[in-house]
Length: 122
Image (cartoon, rainbow, N blue to C red; front, side, top):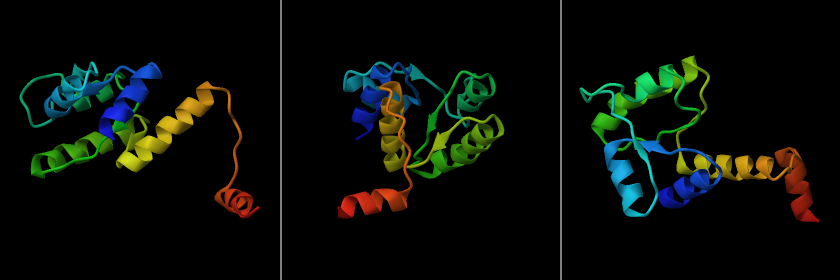
């Protein structure tokens, strides 16, 4: 799922930036990705620095493990403070990619969940 999301985002014109483990995984699957250091790593600029500097337009942050949760609070706080969309599940990221693709293709129909439900009953 992560590979497909990254591939779709790249096809939509996004440049992918990821922390080292994710970047290695993506590159192993043929997806180019830049490196973003984690907050607890000593290298700068780290991912929060990149958010503050306006280098990131969309965050997909699905933390796993104790160290990831440490970074998670800083990433989410910076994204919120600087008005950067932050998606925290792969389901939300998938929906966002579908929405971005639809907008780029000129599909701009908006319906409520209730309307969609009624359409599904027809």
